[in-house]
Length: 343
Image (tube, rainbow, N blue to C red):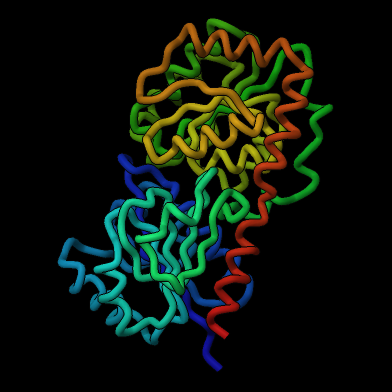
């Protein structure tokens, strides 16, 4: 009996970041462990932006019509896949219907709720997402998986050993910074400047991918400050993150990773599609608002940093609230749904 095959149509770039690839590879890793074959179809720049994708077979997608792209993917496969998993802002019902001739089941991963889909399953891990948001965008037969409980995080974010809030306090707090895998607008530098001027002795861990356009600049900045530790393309960021007293970051997939580890956040909204996530976590007490857009208000950020650094009770409360928002078991829930519609 041949292995089941999952095909992922996704992508990453310096402009859009690596969130799509990050969540897809989390799901692919889980299916690989179950004995499935997983193939990624993506644009050429994806590999350079998110090298993690190299652990799977990849098909390089060149620019063409949607119909030709669908035909190209099927032609390159050696058999019909069990499911197509689509996580791409520029693909919708039209592309999905072109793929229906060679795949029976389609899972769409979305967080915009702004275009129609022809899907059997639809996942939107945005905080506060409701079924009515997809009322006229997905078939009535489509099963919806909504909210951060379905967030596609890697397995080490669900380990109970990650949480030990009592060990996170010391004479000087430890700060975790993640302004997106690629941080196209170089917000990381703005955050590090605020930390340097506010808590100069605070140990700070910074996470970036190899494809970050301002990586060399951040490397130079960190080389000049012994309290800054830059982590590039790490395979297990939870090992670094679990030591944080609090975090400063955007509201993409790393926000759910921070919640799963019980790390309270100063949350920045880097793009409009992150707004629901930020508002959801703030409403439930897992973080505070940092700002919106590419430019960071240094005075406001400094005030927020001092607030976290000087209020242990608030940190403890926010840590517990954050952990309740996302338990890190979303991959298992989504995998079970997929398997249930295939068999």
